[in-house]
Image (cartoon, rainbow, N blue to C red; front, side):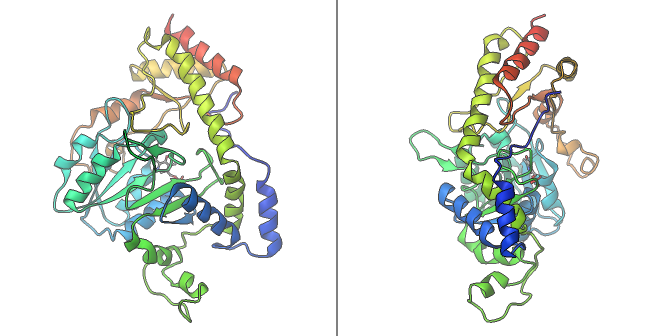
Length: 380
Ligand SMILES: *Cc1c(COP(=O)(O)O)cnc(C)c1O
């Protein structure tokens, strides 16, 4: 069976973990944590970054930093992973879900503004499949209404927002805060892992405190205060050096990993494009202001049944393919809290979007085979 995902291992992970163990420093915020954070800051221009144990944790830190209180409203897409909403719901937020775009599963930016009320505190955008939302539009709305913007860039490492005639800006560096995931299904991974990017000066000091269980330990270690104490809310959001050492090995091969993922994406696209217009499937469309980081390759089928048929056909040929997400506004946990607005495009992606295997060691011949299997089925 060809799996949907297979984590890529560079081979150096164990070496760096061994080295962390040998130095006797395996709790958080040591050498490898600093190496990783410095890499992120230098390469993508984040003002400051903090490794976290997951993207979910990074999002929870955002909810704490934005001081989300019971009754505050947070605007976000319904077509996303649970954590995008969960992190804010835990602080008492009411989630105001927005539909997806017709050409892309990301948030429909044009539907945001009418949903803003005097209780709205933040807009959370999700760069689905690593493809940028229209950030100038989102930031302009947020500025006008004095709202914070959080980028759920879980899937968007090394991807950019690049409107015509302007400099490319790394996703996760544009909103006030950005969150990344290093879960084993993401481009760069450490099993479980994440990153908070702090782009707004106002959050710098408090982010470090929340990260370290509500203490000013980071300042203490830098010699800026002579004892450390409990000074704020927080949790243990930092990963151990074992996780950071693993991640460092991945970062060293980032360019190679990215190149291969984009190559795979293009192979799928070119093969499928040759017959897609004779069928009812839609291929991904990338807005001209967005780059592609090869995170995910997906098709949009015509119906739930058509998708089920295709999954079954691929499975009978030993190919795993998966779907996600289910609309959050219809989830058992949130359905009754949702204000009842229909979000038909989100529901359509939930029913019809199909993801194909995409991982570094996937062979070109397997990609061609998958595309042939799909064309055989659809051109029947
Ligand atoms: C993977 C993912 C998350 C969660 O990341 P974890 O590191 O597993 O917590 C959140 N949001 C999106 C959009 C994701 O794809």
